[in-house]
Image 1 (cartoon, helix red, strand yellow):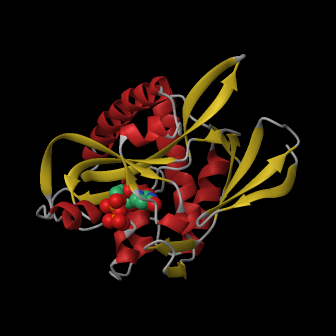
Image 2 (cartoon, rainbow, N blue to C red; image 1 turned 30 degrees about the vertical axis):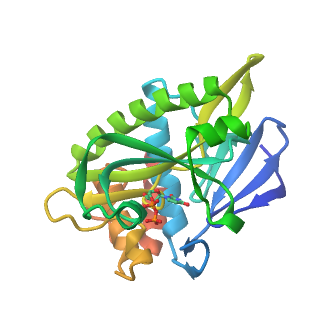
Amino acid sequence: MKKGKKLYEGKAKIIYATNDKNLVIQYFKDDATAFNNQKKSTIEGKGVLNNRISEHILSNLSQIGIKNHLVKRLNMREQIIKLVEIIPIEFIVRNVATGSITKRLGIEDGTVLKEPLIEYCLKDDKLGDPLISEEHILAFDWASKTEIDKVKKMILRINDFMIGMFRGVGIKLIDFKLEFGRVKIDGKNEVILADEISPDTCRLWDSITEKKLDKDRFRKDLGDLIPAYTEVAKRLGILHEQSNVSAVNVTKLSSVKRKKK
Ligand code: UDP
């Protein structure tokens, strides 16, 4: 697999071409942004952790039949993924109300929802990713009814699986963001899960203490983001218990683990 030219650079990731026209390389950066790019920083080691955590979650989802873009992790920061045409919508899934929805609707922070809520936001940084309805999606042809119905079914299965996976390691899955893409598989048009699932794109609270183990540590200036992401990785069994929290150690441990396989 040869790494080709840079195709796209986003806020937290870079996409490179490969010598296979159907595959690209997804590189996880250490950059962190929040509030529509108004707050920016670089947090050493974040990309390494997100690469590992996202690989873990997507490969587990694959095992329960959720088709996704992950082919395999290449190294500390890179994965080979299927090239998809990203549907320009962020699918937000909420189990507990926190963040923007509490302000928008005057809901008390931490309110447990009666059932999971799916919200749609248009992927457009210039507009600040505005909240849209399913009717907007259909009216402006951002996705078809068939695609939306398929995506909704996948989202509910993903949510059920992830709630259970995190509950098993003492973490509450509060909310998260998903992206989907179109791809031809064996001549058939499919919609598959794309992008990443990591503490950058989920809200994860410790089940007992409700300590935030996600990007809110950056958004809210709580500090200790790397120890929190490392804790998530350790609990999921990706990193060994004794591992230290520094980015350097994350790097060393991950290579040790790879060699052992
Ligand atoms: N989220 C994300 N990327 C975005 C917007 C939201 O990954 O561009 C995730 C976010 O981390 C959280 C969930 O989606 O887990 C819901 O976010 P919310 O709309 O509450 O965002 P806020 O405006 O509060 O950051």
